[in-house]
Length: 155
Image (cartoon, rainbow, N blue to C red; front, side):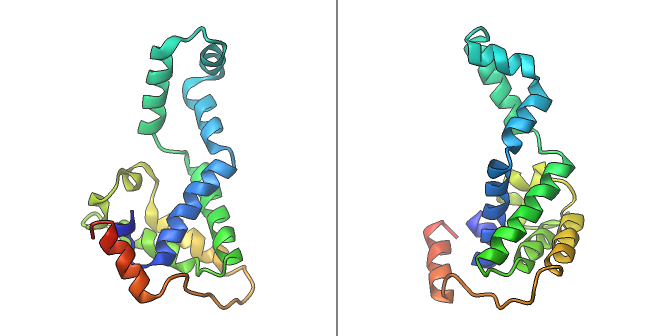
């Protein structure tokens, strides 16, 4: 993912988005929706067996969160970024960048392929960001540190 980002703020947006999924309980919501409460109870009670667990995990990792959960995670990511004084517009820029069919970024990760329309998500992030108070944003890393991070990841 480091290689797919232009700067550390874009990477912070992606990480914030994924952390938001965890904090907002989207994994459990997705499990209940995708594999059903009965299967979850069976797995936790020990009646489901290892095969049910493996099949359930395979299914969960191969499907995306629904649009409402993606939007909720995007908004929470913006909140995290604003609180950390990181410009959320950079997260939107990342999404704009992966929105095109010919994007080189798409070859870096399946994450892109499992999420809904990137352009619309970027526009929602920009709109929501505008509701935040005027803030001055700060860089987390120097340009040199960002390059070192990219080089260390094989960029």
